[in-house]
Image 1: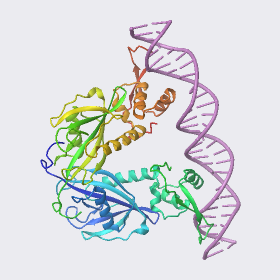
Image 2 (image 1 turned 120 degrees about the horizontal axis):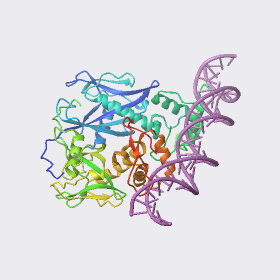
Image 3 (image 1 turned 180 degrees about the horizontal axis):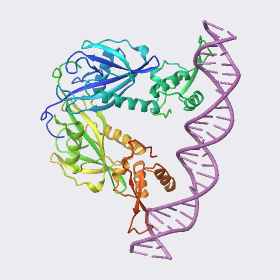
Image 4 (image 1 turned 90 degrees about the vertical axis):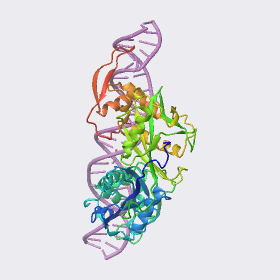
Length: 223
Length: 223
DNA sequence: CCAAAAGTGTTAGTGATACACCCATGT
DNA sequence: ACATGGGTGTATCACTAACACTTTTGG
């Protein structure tokens, strides 16, 4: 620790960010097609170098905004990947983040350094550059854990929502059906929802709208 | 991402490692007293710069061995801390690791760059250098989680052990008593233990020895 | 009238907790 | 004989999982 800060050659550090959203009842992630070598024309998780005066989280946020125009969302650090051979250009350590965004808020801005940006269903991911497959696999595990034990799911919903909407999100993430009665019972018993008014103009029996209570602790066992 | 790898000034990267053990029925961590500025004479979590051709995990393992002489143990990456101001000497990102070692295997090697190395009860931690208090708090949360949901606890025990020994470890980590009957029932019902022979030469009813089955999956809900 | 999603209760099974006494050994 | 930790069973409670029909609205 007490070695001089300049004694050793320094690595580059990047922040990569796995960006999830739900579209068409499907869990998707954003990938960018690399315009330059190495791995030219391969798809990759968005990311970029951490600037010298920027925190890791700020770097991840900057990448997110560059790619999607989205700010102020749930963002979580996942893991740091530092195999010395993970980038053929030299020593590059990456700090991986993950975020979950409401697809209505997105406007894709193809950044100048990539030839293409696209959403991919997590069920149909192409071959990825670097060790990005490992990062993706890791993030998926963490994502499921987060849905099971926290209220992240609500960051995918508008301010007011129905029980049915929450249930659909859980069914997409876990790729299975839940019993409607048990699901509602469970969610309501957690005492994290506030009743709002009835939803109007729906072509079926009008559902109750709920909002998430403000003062919820971080961890709530949902499922 | 496609910016040139040399376009931005590079940060230093360190690996810090929170080393836990149990001694005298108490959970302890290893701290080193800093011999040089900044934070001279403050206690700190052991760590050091990641070498350019060394993986993050190898750097953490190297630090661990330098401080304790211990190799081949459970080691887990916790989180990366990258606030630009966390080190007054310049930009230093640290990747924090945690490990759990059997206190019988330790021989402390005071490394040359620190003036003192000591075990501290987690209940009596002195003021720490840098943002090491944050790292420690984070690691403690993770540690408890690990004990609840995985079999790490067994890395603190010899090959063969009694139910009572496991229970004592859990009581130390969670700082509370468990009911003996319920605890044994729970542990045995998990089907992760193999019965060995009876323990001999104890001054009370001889207990059954168990070993951990080899083919256990990573996550087992213990408590 | 039809389609679509909402709303709602009971039962059976499983796992968690609370609780107290006798046993085998060494000294 | 005593001290030490080991070993064991039952009853209650809380939570989970399985399961189907009626309601309200718009088109």
